[in-house]
Amino acid sequence: MSSFDEVIIPAGHMQNVFGQFDKNIKNIEKTYHVSIIVRGDKIRITGVEGNVKQARSVIDQLVSISESGGVVEDQKVNYTMELAKTGEAEKMSEIVSGSGVICHTIHGKPVKPKTLGQKSYVEAIDNNMIVFGIGPAGTGKTYLAMAKAITAFKAGEVNRIILTRPAIEAGEKLGFLPGDLQSKVDPYLRPLYDALYEIMGAEQFMKNMESGLIEVAPLAYMRGRTLDNAYIVLDEAQNTTPAQMKMFLTRIGYGSKAIITGDLSQKDLPKDVQSGLEQAVKILKSIEDIAMIEFTASDVVRHPLVQRIVNAYETYEQKLSKKK
Image (cartoon, rainbow, N blue to C red; front, side, top):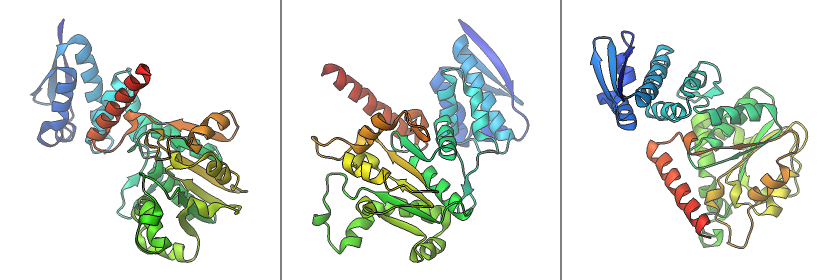
């Protein structure tokens, strides 16, 4: 049954809510199969009753974001629509509120959770010694972990930051790469360097790196060490073997916090080798002071196309598993 609703958008917020070339409103019209027409400071939403109701709830949240001083970006629009599917659009307000800022980049941009999954992840990091962040690419697992590490380091909560990754991935082997060991390893650690540069600044990072207060190294370098008073981030953990994961977890000492991130759908280990991350999740899920946070495609904060790609792969893999 056809229905309509009207929303008043306060003066000065219409352009922010509509987006450049009305892209936000066009996105809502396309998603909910409704028609949205501007009438002065009001917009009229026409369509099937249930769709009109969801579109209205999304627009209300976009207005709230704009009124709180936020920019209505693609990611916020898409995530608000995702929440609206389960009647939780109003939860967008608590995500975009002024609280929850972890730190600022060197350009002054606030680093904060953008989804409920990211919010749960940051809260888990605050309240646990070891946190596993598991989910698809683009969900902010590594970036938020780095932001928390840098913030704790600057506040004097830890004496150093240790960032590590398995050095073999994407089917390549270090022996085939040119140069010395550092040259071979650096490409695998580049995403960690990039996040450090953006949040800390290249000059400050190099200064702390040279003094040994920040260490970026392959996972193999952790063997035989005890890591006290440190913030440790293990990235791409799906590419660890069970032995490597056990070795890493047993390095953690007093006053330390460890964040382990990975995407179990992107393992690069040989087919007959179990992922250390996969095994650890099964073994450690009920241990106190260890948290397991699972991200979904709705937590992807990159270009909306990335979210659709993740969903397409998940659907394909589910069909394959049913056939087996």
